Every structure is written in structure tokens, then in C-alpha cells.
Image (tube, rainbow, N blue to C red; front, side):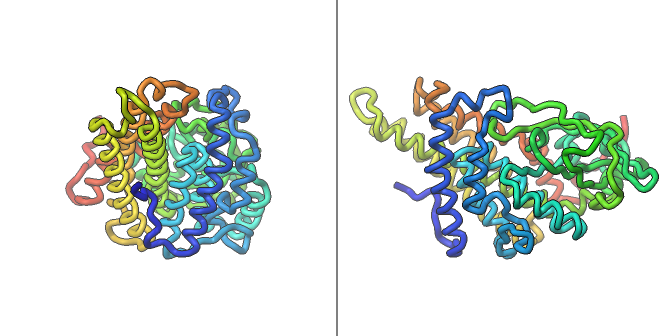
Length: 414
């Protein structure tokens, strides 16, 4: 059978890490998901994923990727860090995309903190992250009145963050709300974005802050019950006169410009998680059609079935090829990195959903049964159309990065 997770071009370290993740998925994650499929629908978010899953992830060293080695984390080769993130994200998502999203928030926020946080805060919080297996990080940008559209070229005051931060008596006072935050429900530490200069455009007036969960004035308002990726608890946060020490400011007024170290790898990781869902779909379909008999013969002997399987494999290979190209561009900080990382996020979300649909349909009636485990693949794939920018916003961003002088000029207020 075609190897849809080829090893060519990988370093020995990458091969070993991928194998560790694959064993973790096959021996721990997949057996848990299959034997506990009902837990995905437990309306107590804290009861869904047992603590031992993250503890086992800690044992193989994938919970603290991106944390500097001096603080006890797992430091990766900077020349291939993003590609390694992608490789591991794919493997974990092959077992469960929600678990993958839970982990990758730690990786991405750790990269942001090691670049922006003052030394004493790195010492404090990286120690907590490394020492506590259930410790999670979250990145709080999206708001009820502004999400993906913030990345259109509307760099004007009226498009600014609704969450506001004001300095008073040597402290920052923050008021506002964030929603659709990955790990938002159960994270221990948040990076929060707020407007600090209402007279400036969004790119010149947004600051970022480090916010511990137990900060007075911070309320975790709810867990957003999503259709897929349900083993990551997406949350909504409210800030009411929340006070922070002055030194918890990460970047003043240029937070969105400085956050490229989070956003670009984030697009690559999204596509890689999506690819992992596609690989799971292909593996499940390939096994089923070679063992299930319909119409007097094994399914794969029906030409209509064989054609679908060929199409699935081709879409997966196409996504993987663009993913590797985009990841390398981000690692190299190449001029086309911005365009490519948005392209692969967009392309993967659309192509892998088609792969998941084929998987669902090839399983016939079994495909839509909750306890069979295939409909979950389709639900998880559908989520990626809306994660880290919607499909249409991604297309607009691609055009803007290709034609910055002419595309998407702001038309002014209504």
C-alpha cells in the first residue's frame, strides 16, 4: 500500500520523534477514543479527557516543545522547527485532532513567550509548564465583534480590539471579552490582546499581556460546545477591571506585528493537524474496503470504490506536498512564507474535508453510527474550515499578500 506518511527528507531526530508519537497514538490515544467514544459528548468539559493522556504525552516529550532547554523543555533545531511541529501535529491528530490542538497551543505560545516575555516571567511560567503535566496555555485574540475579519486590510481605529487596556497607577486595567479561544476553558496561563491606543489603527494600537488564570477580574465564562475537536475545550473569557502588574505587558502597541512567530507556524500546524485527520480517514477507509463484502465481493473490487480511494490518496499527497513547501518557507523566513502558509491552511481544510466525506460514504450505514467512529473523522475535518481564519478570509489574505499595493483597499466607514 502507498506510504502516505513518507520518511524521506527527515532527520534522524525527526524520525524518532515521529515514531514515538505514532506509538503513543496507536497504544494510548486510539484505544481510548474507540473504547470511550461517549466521553466526547460529556457536557462536563473536564471529564472528557482523563489526566493520564497528557501525562503520557509528557513522557514522550511532546507537551513542552518550543520551551527553551534551559527551562527543562524540548528545544528543536531552529532550521527545521516548524516542519517538526507539523510532523508531530499530524501524528497526534491522526489519533485525535482535539488532543493535537490541546498540545500545539502549548508549543505556539511557548515560542511567543520565549521571544517576548521578560526573563523573570519566563523563569516562572516555563517552570510551571514543565513541572505540571496538566498545565495548558492559550492565545486570546478573537472577540465577539471581530474575528477573522480583523486580518483584512482594515487598519483603522474602528476595526480595533473591543477589549481595552488602560494604565492606571502602575498597573494595567483590562476590560473586554474573548471568545472561540483554544484551550480557553482550562488553560492556566493566557496571552491576551487588547487595544491600548484607540486613536491609532489596529496594527499600531494593539498590545499583548501575560495573564495568569487566577487573576482577579478574569472569568472563564463558558466552554464552547463544538461539533468536532471536542477533546480540546474551547472557551470564552470575560475581563472586568482586571488588574495586571506593569511588567506583564509583553508588547505595547505592536503586538500583532510581533506575533508573527505565533501566527505563521500556526497556519502550518493547522494544515498538519488537518492532514493527520485525512491520513486517519484514508487508513480507516482502506482497511474497511479491503475487508468488507458487499454485492458478493470485497468492496475494493468495485470500481466506484477503488476510484474514491485513489482520489483520497491523491488529495492527501497534494496537501502534504504544499505543506512541506510552506513549512520550509516559514523555517527559512522566505519572502513567500506568508502567502504559502495561508495557501496550505486553506487548501488542506477544503481537500481533507473531501477525503473525510469519501471515508464516511465508503463505510455506508456504519459511517454515520456514533459508536463506529467514522462520523467523528468527518466532524473533526469540518471544523478546520473555521479554525485560524475562515476559508474566504484566507483567500483574501492570500491575494493581499500577493498584491499588497492594490488588493483590498479599505473603503472607509459606512
